[in-house]
Length: 102
View 1 (cartoon, rainbow, N blue to C red):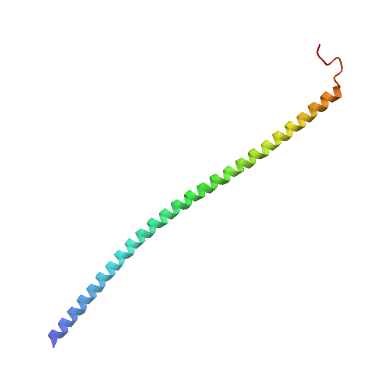
View 2 (view 1 turned 180 degrees about the vertical axis):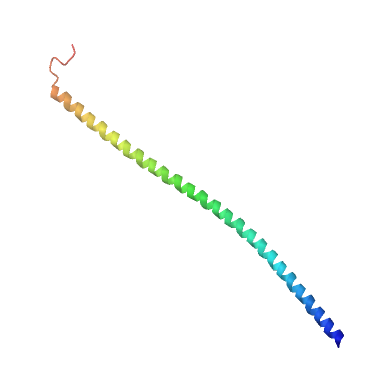
């Protein structure tokens, strides 16, 4: 009977060691899974950073285009006003004889 008890306790001890071995394997799998998740997270972060930079450059480009359009419109307005003023100035002089070269 004592032999059976000793064999049973040895069997339980072996099962306990196998359970510990299973836990170690589970820890190893979890570690590999965590490494893979970190790799994917790092790649997603890099992609997000690139996307943010592209969005930033796109908004800068749009602001520059708007700025250029505003200044081009102002220059066109100034040219139109100068043309009208020059025409009005020539009309007020009425091309009298002393202003026309001989």
